[in-house]
Every structure is written in structure tokens, then in C-alpha cells.
Image 1 (cartoon, rainbow, N blue to C red):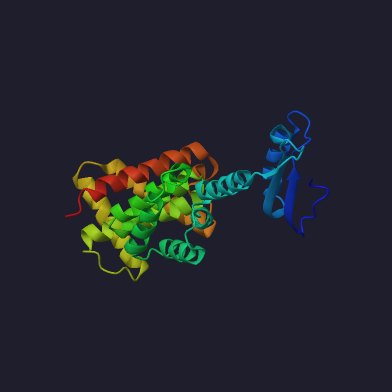
Image 2: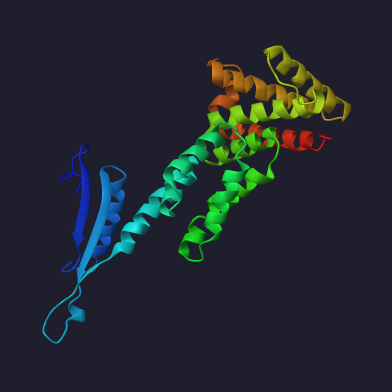
Length: 269
């Protein structure tokens, strides 16, 4: 199929399974799902000549198996969401307007307040009682967390965790750092707008003083390391190289950052 279908073309595939030899129809179905990721296949139509349903006049009905096409689209959409966090295609498959899904995704990426839109989608997903309800359950849970997490730094930390699970370490580290700074700003600077790098430095110093007073000097060192690793990743230098070249060490450092956030968030009045 890869030889027959050009990478530049767009296709609607029709598969006749009537005379498929033994397991061949099943193999072809999975093959098409793979080819879909490498070629532009807009639609798959699968037909079956049901000889076992022949009537008294010898007429055989031809059945169109639509559900296979639907399952294929759901599989792709769910995979995209789980690997990237992009949920627009998944919402499209459950009949939610694509333009509104795109609008919500963009606003979430830009840290806008979208409570009403999120609630609307959750209600839409709750309206299903069939297989669609379970397929969309991971998305529903994530959207519920968006509503529950009221402060910006909390939403950024939740995003960092999600990106970390997807092994998008660069984005996860940046959001972790920014979430820690915003949390510190909430505690020590009464959530004033951060305009200059010097203000970030002051917030980090306040966080370190807080940990030192609590007898948690190790967390002060961890915050400094996170800052240096973040700067190394963003600016391309080799400081703290051990965390840049060893995944296990980076994972340990990231988890330390989450611990720092959990301690700081409890200090917010």
C-alpha cells in the first residue's frame, strides 16, 4: 500500500473484505491504520458481501461496515491527545464544533481563563452513555483539573507534569520553573506583576530564605540547580551538564521541583 499510495496524494480507501483469505481482512485493516499515519487518507470505506445472508432469490446484500472507519479515527485522535495534549480532533469525533475546540485549546495554551468553555465541553462529554464516554474520559479528567486549579502557577505545574509524562522535558522544565517563580511571587510579593529579571531573582532569594528558616536547605540548593539547568537548556550552555545528559538525574531533579512546589503552595494564605 505504501508503494501504491504517493506521499503527495490524498485518498479515500475502499476495502472489499468479501473474499478475503482467512485472516487477511484483519491484517489489511491494521495495515490501513498504519498507512494512515504515513499517507493522507481522508476516509476508509469497508464493504462485505454477506453470502451467509443470501435471500431466497439468491441475492446477496453488500454491507458497509462504517464502525471500523469511526474506530480508526478515534484511535488516531486519542493517540494524538495522549502524546501531545492536542484534543481538537478528539472533540471533533464526538461532534463538538472544531472551531470552538481550536479556540479553547489556544486559550488554554495561552493561560487564559476559560472556565465556561471548559464546563461546556465537560457537559457535552457527560451527555454520552456509550463507548464515547470512556474514550473521552482522560480528556474529561484533565479538563476537570483545569477548573479545580484556580491559580495560574497551579495550572502551569499541572501542565509541566503532563508534559513530563509525555517526555517533553524542555517544555516541562520551563513550565516547572515558571510555576515555582509565580508561586513564590504569590507568597512573598502578593502576586504583583513580574516585570524584570531582578524581580525573579528577588523571588528566588525569598524562597531560599523561607526554606532555610524551615531547616530545608536542601530544597534551596535544588531550586538553584533547577534555575541553572533551565538556563542551560534555554540558552544552550553546558552548566549542570550532568542533568542535561542523564535522563534519570533529570527525572530526579524534576520530581524535586514538584516537591518544592507542594511545600510552597501550602504556605499561600
